Length: 278
Image (cartoon, rainbow, N blue to C red):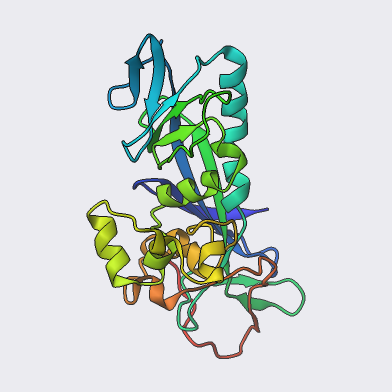
């Protein structure tokens, strides 16, 4: 794809907005969020205060609830390499899942295309996601423990910054990356005042993971499904990247239809919102 400019913005994650050069009137813009991360493999050789515990000559890890001890194994080169490789699967969970639709009176991304009769194109914004390993100023530091499968029977409670070795093969990975993107649990996303207040206190009641079947199935509940409200990180960022501060993200909408084409208006036809540039 051809793009003629981009904007980068530093925050809890990196984002980059790229928009078309006008050659293709069917081309949308792209907004890419990138999380730089560092994986710290914790065991009795690499102990971490508050996580690893030695008891009767054996190594244990405490989960994020700080209530249970779980027997752990040493990490080896094969298991760490596999975890590093499979962690990248997190990109697929959130990448290219949403398209943002610009407000009718927002023209800052408009471009002219002279393909065919000539158009003014108001591009939608495709939401992309990347995770990138980094030793230098990562946005996200994750401690990872390797549970002993021959002993563990209880569920290890992971968090945004504490994983076990099996979290990559269940809904946990997408859920925790959702937290890293700034999303709370599904009831918080839906505006539940009690869940929002509890989360600020570090309290996470089960009901905040969803009460209806739809809520429970959401990735920020206990499932894997997505709703347009899960585009919140991109909705928040598009407002700041385009200086569209009049209504923040409330003026933009999101769709799960990633094939949504940009509106095209023939040149010379009046638009709602005069074409403009940043």
